[in-house]
Length: 97
Image (cartoon, rainbow, N blue to C red; front, side):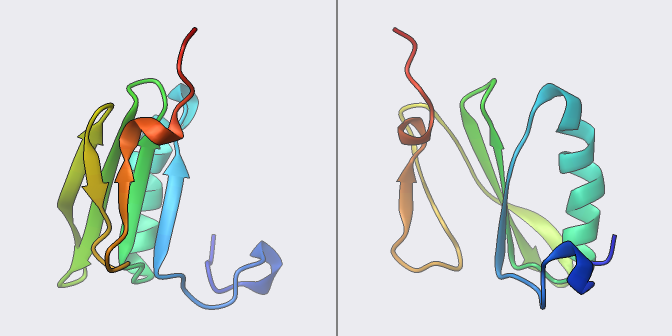
């Protein structure tokens, strides 16, 4: 997959990507896509895991992703590239009745 290929609907490289993983996409999102996004210079990569109610943020430094933040329900995380943007992790997940 070439992120710069117009047939994929993307022109240029986004500053940030958010992936919502499922059990069937865990390996692809944590390894394959991470490598792809890193190669293309995407500055911030969020991995949202609904099964664990968690969000992991990786940021690009020296052409490699490094850990920036990890949050679970009840915690708050902040973007590195979007100034003053914070997220209450539990606000993006449905509450069980």
